[in-house]
Structure formats: structure tokens, C-alpha cells
Length: 487
Ligand SMILES: Cc1cc2nc3c(=O)[nH]c(=O)nc-3n(C[C@H](O)[C@H](O)[C@H](O)COP(=O)(O)OP(=O)(O)OC[C@H]3O[C@@H](n4cnc5c(N)ncnc54)[C@H](O)[C@@H]3O)c2cc1C
Image: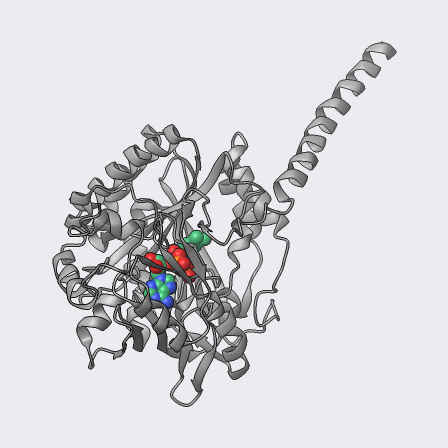
């Protein structure tokens, strides 16, 4: 009997200790520092490390004069890079002169009365926040993470989680661009409007955006509120509670994989309540061990997605949060970074559908993702107002944006498989009169691209006028410019 008891105790200890050791070792491996990015001067890569492109030279200019001379005197292809968070070769092409804008990052003017800022475009949101926060001002529209450059954000026409806004173009007062002949042009909705609406969202195809004047807004305290519901209930909730609610600053809703039937809506509304987080900005250089481990758990651990939905999220959202807007707007993309991207990598995709097509798109999307066993980490739904003016607009009507964050293998066959389901999702978005986002992998066919961006003809006419020898190139434009005519 005693022996039996001893054996039972021994088995219990093994059962308890083994998972603890397993978790501890995994936590250590998953959260150890990521490998440093490739720093070779001529190998340009992006955050996914799927697109390593050999350029002839990479230069970090620091003045308008330098950029102008470089462009004027270079006959071959020129590509432009910001913080390198696009994911499909949008920042380089073989044999290019690569302009790495990250050292061109000064604030040129801050008008606190008009709430406007003029910047050099290699500056990141975080660098801007560090200055404007002292004046209790905030960026009006930006992404969730603050690592991106202004130039990279304008050239993609990004959006964030802001309610009542849409693409960043709605907050841009003016830009200056250096064209293929080295000339400097000022563009705004009133001056050289065709250049303004072409360059914003133009993926570095028309010239280098060197300066931008952006509208700022007031910083304020925000309180987190959240609600769980079924996906079917979400559109009505959004229309009645969120869409016209002026107190809501940020809003997004996460659809839980792999059922894709439950959704968690998270908003931040203006408040006068006392702060629960008193830092004004996210601390720099955090190690993000918990965040990285959580993402690993969701993507790798059996039942990891269930654990997130039923244990992790309820725990994380159980406390009240009141913080500064600038704090919530200043996330660091390093929190997403895995230890290695060699065999697998995290990748983003995004689809846009008119808001009344939400309910028909979600089941189609879910069926495609599950049919292809996509290892989905998160599907985040955001909202964007219509942008009828930018030439390559992705919001031709008021849309819901479906941001897919998933893990994929890096082998050739795994990349091809991603291409197959990506094209199915693009077709699904097209059939709902929607579109897909361009800063990610280049899996769309030319036909899909042209159906989603139906003013590409206007863009190419503009490019022929401003850049007649097709100097401004990258992998994206090499694939989708119908008159690239590359030998
Ligand atoms: C973790 C993560 C989260 C993201 N979240 C969001 C989000 O919430 N909302 C959203 O809309 N997007 C989001 N994105 C996409 C991201 O906004 C874009 O990839 C954006 O372009 C990144 O900026 P960047 O400085 O890294 O640009 P890069 O990737 O360096 O460049 C992007 C494009 O801009 C061009 N470009 C860069 N600088 C200039 C310039 N000065 N003049 C002319 N062209 C230029 C480049 O040639 C390239 O075509 C996210 C991406 C990641 C990796």
C-alpha cells in the first residue's frame, strides 16, 4: 500500500514538474533576444526576412540637396526605404541605388497653436511623439505601432484604429517631393493636387517624399472598455455604439480563430478618470518576454488559441485601464518579434470590405483559412472612412478592414501555399466589392491588382510624366506597373 502511494506521489510529481520545466525552457527560448537584422550594406531586407534583395548601393541621405543630387545623377533604378516594415519587396529591387531614409529624420516646424508639424520623412512616429507629447499633442492618424517612418506611412496611405477617420491622407496638409529630374515640388490638395493624390499611397513610384506637414490633435486620457459578442452581432454593435460616438478614440475588434464566430471589441474612450498607467509614452527597450511568449503559445501550443480566448484575454482585460492617448498610440513592434525567422515567420495581410458586407465576408474568409490550415494568430477588425481622392485608394467606400496576423513557413512550397489562399481571399474581397492591402507579400495576380486598384491607369500616366525613364522602382512596381517593360 505504502509502495503504491509512493508510486502515485511520484507520478503526480512527474505530471506537474514536466510541464513546468517544459514551459520554463520554452519561455526562455521563445523570449530570448531575436537574431540581429542583416546589416549588410547591399542586402536590403524587410521585417519578415522573406525578401532579401541585393542592391548596388545603399545610402543614408541627410539633406534635400543630397537626395536631389543622388537622384539627378543616377541613371539606374532607385528604390526608397523607411523602417522596412512592408513585407513584399516594396523597398528595393536588384541593382538599385537604395535610399535608406532613416537618418533623414528632423522635425522642421512645430506650430502648437495650429496643431501642425512639418517633418523630414525618415522620422518615426515615436520620434515625433517624444517631442509633441511635451505639448500634450498627438498624431491624428497613425498605425498601432510607432516604429514606422512618416515617408513609409504616407507612401502606403496607412490607417490606424481611430474612429471617425480613415487613411492617413485625411491628416496630411502638404508634402514636398523630389522628382526623377531632381526638382523639388510642393503638393497639397490645392497645389499640384495630382501629385499629392498620386504620391500618398504611391509606394515610392513617383519620387521621394522629403517633407510632410501633418495635422496633430490633442492628447487626452483614454479608458479601455471591451465587450464579447458573436460575429453576427458586431456590425449592429459597431453602428449603434461606436461609429458616431465622438468619445471613442481607438477601436478594434478581434475575431478568435479557428472558429471565427466570436469577436472581442475593444475601445478606448476619452475620460477624466485618474490614470492607472501614469507613463506618458510606452517605455523604450522593454524585453517583451510575456508578449512574445503569448504569441508563441497562440501559434504553436496545442489549444493555444483556445487558451488565449478563454484564459489569456479574460485575465488581461479583467483590470481597468486608464492611460494617455500617446501611450496607447506608441506600441513597439518589437513585442511581436520571434527569436528566429529562419524556418517560420509572422506575416500580415489585410482585406477591406464595405461595412454592409461584413457578415457575408467573415464566413467565406473563415472557410478559406480553415481549408488551408492557416496558423492564424489574430484577425483584427478596424474601420475606415471613404477615401475617394487618392489615386491608389484602398477605401473606395466606407470599409471594415480585416488585419490578419499569422505564422507561415519560409520554404518555397510553404510560400507558394500562402499564395494560393491569399488569391482566394482577394477574390472573396473582390466579390464583396472590396479590396486588399498592398504593403504585404506580392501574391495577387496582376488582374486582381487592377480590379482592386482600378485607377492604376491614371497613376501610370502620372508616372510617365514625372518619371519617364522609370527610375523609381521596387519589386512591387516591377510586378504591377503594366508598362514597366523590364528587360
Ligand atoms: C507589425 C506591423 C503592424 C502594422 N500595422 C499597420 C496598421 O495598423 N495600419 C496600417 O495601415 N499598416 C500597418 N502595417 C503596415 C505598415 O504601415 C507599412 O508597411 C508601412 O509602409 C511601414 O512603414 P515603413 O517606414 O516601414 O515603410 P517601408 O516598408 O520602409 O516602405 C514602404 C513603402 O514606402 C516607400 N517609401 C518609404 N519612404 C518613402 C519616402 N520618403 N518617399 C517615397 N516613398 C517612400 C517605400 O519605397 C515602400 O514602397 C503594419 C506593419 C507591421 C509589420
